[in-house]
Length: 402
Image 1: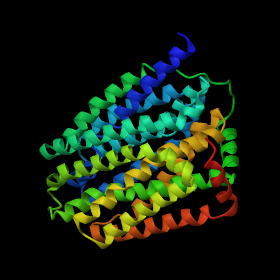
Image 2: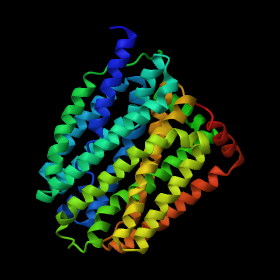
Image 3: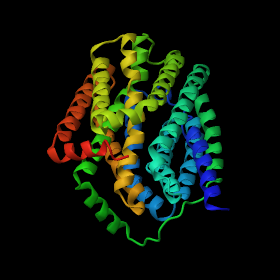
């Protein structure tokens, strides 16, 4: 198979893979399911278990991707998610805890690997300059898949809160099939220990722009997940649904998640022009501020009028998923790219796990108030650090980098 044919085959398989990865039937109702099974406090603690598991696996999985292979890491994700969704179907505290661990395994091995696989495939064919444009197109497909499956998942959950996991199990099987059609992109030989690679990553984190991008990813993870995971119980409160009968909010929660994904996918049409006009720093900080305002408003107002702000988080999520890998992949060596992205993701997930433990409680309004304080503080920190002269100068230069 010629290089160009292999490249096109990989790009097609990647597009299919990402659409299936985006098929999150359970997204709008997973917290409702956990609350139904184990209560709000246990549900938030199980969420913390997920994030703490990723803390353990995130960096080793990135190193695995850099040194063993991108495709192998993507296959680990698919297999883990097949097991994960099976355990969710079993139900009960023990099985759900196991499912959370396997979900974490999947996301740890996916984190940083999907976008670096795409970048490496294009780079090997001399087309790395196309990355942002092509990644935006693929992410649009992923987010539209999320939109469609979120609606479907909400409808399925209205019948039975377990049915979204049945559909997700099928999607994970298709995902594994897509990875079997992929071939490893060419890589330069590289021998290095895990410890030596981590020292190199620490060196990268001392560079002003990469340090700020890492901080921003931490802030983004906290902001997006606070609004995302608290939106379904907030919606149930707005609709005055009883806490022990969450299925009544499932269809509307599915529509909300679908709208978030669709808005994010639609916004990617404007990502590149906004980056060139205003610079990535301005774009990312404005979007972070909007998400923080959404969290604050959820704490202050109990109304369906808050939904447009909740939906706006999809724009920040989509822009970050395209801009951050582009910035980092251009500045980090091939054999460190996935590890670097994994480190940033690890820091974000670890921070959010701590946040979850801090805000966990039975009284939802109090949880929302604490979450709002955290969200506003996180957004302000990102803005202050971006104003440092060394960071501001590199962000201005990045505006015209591509």
